[in-house]
Length: 212
Image 1 (cartoon, one colour):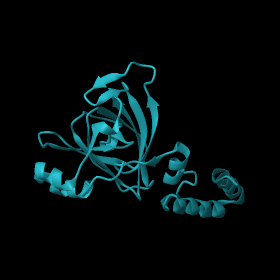
Image 2 (cartoon, one colour):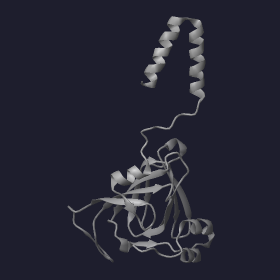
Image 3 (cartoon, rainbow, N blue to C red):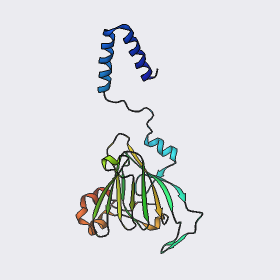
Image 4 (cartoon, rainbow, N blue to C red):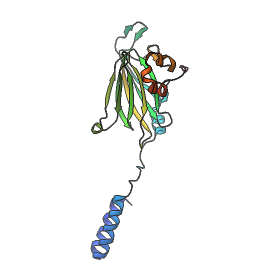
């Protein structure tokens, strides 16, 4: 039976049965209101997102799938070859894989938050300035629903502690993404250039470049 309907039925019986039953019902409802909320049975899991969105592992960490290429527009010439004017992906961090390791792109990237727990972004600008941003669903908590990272900035991301166990975003990249335009952050190399950010670099970079 629907919980709300069941409560209405008990309330009706209590009113008909007199003050004693009504007092019992009020006490019961008071206890229910102070109890810990039950987890949503329909809450989607990280695995379901991976399966339903067709995501696969990304070299920088997390999971992704390319969802758009600007095939109907003229390509853009770059030093490394022609690029789509724009591409877009889903990108997912999970409790089992909570880190998107430091990397740097030539292209500008706009990030859009969708679902799940907030994600912290750590940005190191070319002059060494450090910037941290929280992407999430609640602007009242200072979360950003959208984040633009210009090309040339080192970027890492990590999932914050929460109830969902994942954070899902989309990224739009212009000019379009190509692996030849991405540099993965190697711990020793980054520490040479930005020793003042040792804690972040050691936690969010790799000792060597993984296979792509």
